[in-house]
Image (tube, rainbow, N blue to C red; front, side, top):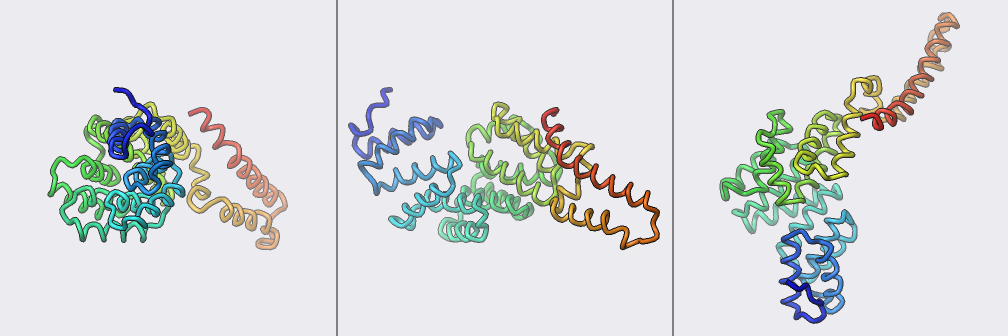
Length: 294
């Protein structure tokens, strides 16, 4: 099939062609056609939606959000635009705003499994696993084979430590819906921020098995494997509370010892201070070396 020039196509034919490319994840071709199409049809709702979606795929969250709001200014009830808004707000960590989007949509479309799945994504991001599972189950009640709901249910099961079961099923879900990688990555980040680094590693490893050629996922797994290595155990306080707080506490303790315990022999004080300096060097040097070795 000849791609043709978007200028030579009518608006409807152009939108149909872009939809064909998007469904096949041929985003580079779609991106060019959307840009040229918007030059001729700047208020086309379909073209604005595809433009925002492609910006989201490119991880350009601010432009995607601006384009989505432009679309919703034209049509506040645009279904796809509202869904994309909810996803963008989740990734921008406006979790309350995202939840309002999903609640409003579910009031209008209470039997739509897509909405239960997306709301479930948000609950995964805030680690409310029980609610994510309930939302996925409700979506599956309306459509038992709904892939996105199956994905949310699988990820909730994984966080609970039950394993993924059939990895081929996960690979199929991710290949058909690339946005699941973004959801999984958001989930891994949330787990890591909560100090659940091993759980974050488990999620990232499952995603990498589903997309073994994804360099970003590979790098995430390497970083998390290094963070969970036994040799990083002494650095757990830094991982958990951040180095400024830990280093400050150590420094006050190590160098304030002569005042805290004036009776300590000078040799003991010097030894503790030496250990402190070694710890600082270890915390700066070893993690980067470890990541290179893994």
